[in-house]
Image (tube, rainbow, N blue to C red):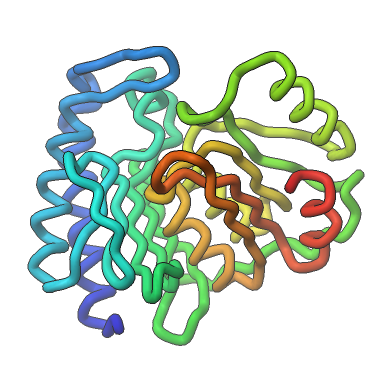
Length: 250
């Protein structure tokens, strides 16, 4: 179980890791650029710093950038740089994402918007905040008035039938946004800016922290395991609209 000391430590770790990101902003050091995925030097340097710092808490760490992915029931889940492509294109929407899970369930989330230096988090009384100010999900209850935020992750299917099915399902929403950073998109659902988040083929380290923050902000979510380890179909929204959208998207 986390204490306030742990929460304060995570915040300081993320602030320090942000400085590493900013140093590399003009030269992220692209290592691989394969199909829909990209890896950079800055991913690995941030991962090394955050991973080592979190390990000192004596909880295990599952990280996107680790060579060995150990399934943990209680510990940290880390994405050192969510939105790497945005980072390499200098599109200011990328983050550091850290979750704490108990019994495989995300119970705490910490997301730092690197470019804006905005910190989204949960606290010990299960409230969500943005720079220490409490946030809540929207109260929208109609799909036709709802804004869906989504994406096409590297693990998703891009065949024509799957894409057409997706288009058919989302046509009922008022607007659709795709911004390329799952953790921050979930935080914007938690803040009530967007109403619904959905992605299929997304990985646990991209979403765990954001899901904890959405739930603490009064929202609901559902995860469906997919064929690859740590890969999920995910829906999150406010409680007023959750059942309606789950019938359409899941």
